[in-house]
Image (cartoon, rainbow, N blue to C red; front, top):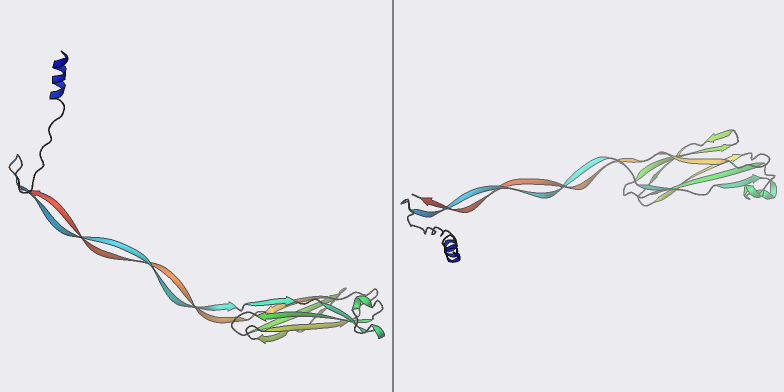
Length: 198
């Protein structure tokens, strides 16, 4: 019985595959088959980044640096105390405070700055006449203000506030590099092999 089973399994081991058709051969239905080669155009979209330079114009502020120097308070009327720091002259009856703002033009264009000053001592205030000055590139100018006043008893120095009233603005043009994505269609020829039976 084992022998019969082995023979049965050996007979069902696999179905033989159909032989491949060679070009020009006929299959069982009597058709003759051959390979046909065709060249087909294929359109493909290709995109790439393209850089270009464009002139851009507009109003802009000039680049600059502003540095306020330490305030100087001097006695200007009291015999031996004249010209001495106010804090060293308790009997001084007239003082002067000096405030200075140094502006450096860090731009490559010349411009004009306008600076104002405001002094206060107790309940009194003094607005100074603004100062305008044109500054060339890489140069500096000191906007210098001073105010005379009575320091009182006990002495009290004036407070000083400096401020830029007007910054220079210019109409400037410069080149900017920009990048855009450009796409185009490219046609390539592909070779396709097709089996034809007739």
